[in-house]
Length: 317
Image (cartoon, rainbow, N blue to C red):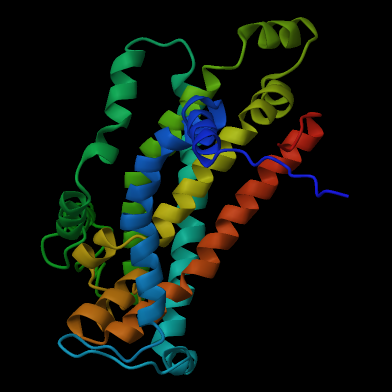
């Protein structure tokens, strides 16, 4: 019995078909449009992140190629009291600043959402702290809290409330309060304007129906405003926590991490060890140690959004 010969498809035809699919398929078309953005993200984000993680496992110094030392840098940090102090400062700084920024920002958003005279001008004024460069804001606060020329100490002395200037940035407790206050001042506009944009999407008919049902302002906020604003709050607070946790410019320009490391955050300590002290491997290890905290903040926000979708009967796609 003769063998049956099965004809093979011509390679040219299959290649042409595949190329036409790549050109005309909607999914692949989206991929081509995303390719330039993906290249930028890989080059400017993924590669530096990977390089930083690799450096954390080496003893690289400025001017000297390092060698692989496994987890030696992390073991050194585990016994470093200054590192653990910076972790405590970072968590305290992030928690207090983010909480106050959310509370004040939400209040301003609700206030600016009401009908009032000069509302447009007030909204523009709220943005001023956010658009001022961080270093300029830090220098301004540095003068405000200066131990000799502080306007706060001068005013309190003339009112007879104190007898000598307050050493704001020279005392550990006051220094922490001052940098947290400065961060709140800068971050409130971002939270307020973003939440205000979310409030604009809430239909006024919902409030009218609640008013007819005799609901109080607190009940309307609890059962209408807050549930509809939850996804935006999750996104805004995620960005707020990330920005606060990785804050560097404000702290470095105001205190350089002092006094006695009381305001050192993980970001500033990493810069001090890597750039000033020249220990690139150790500085990279401190930066890499920030990743689990940042991932935890992102995952909390993501799970919060997923839970909200489940409550509203939406899919998790």
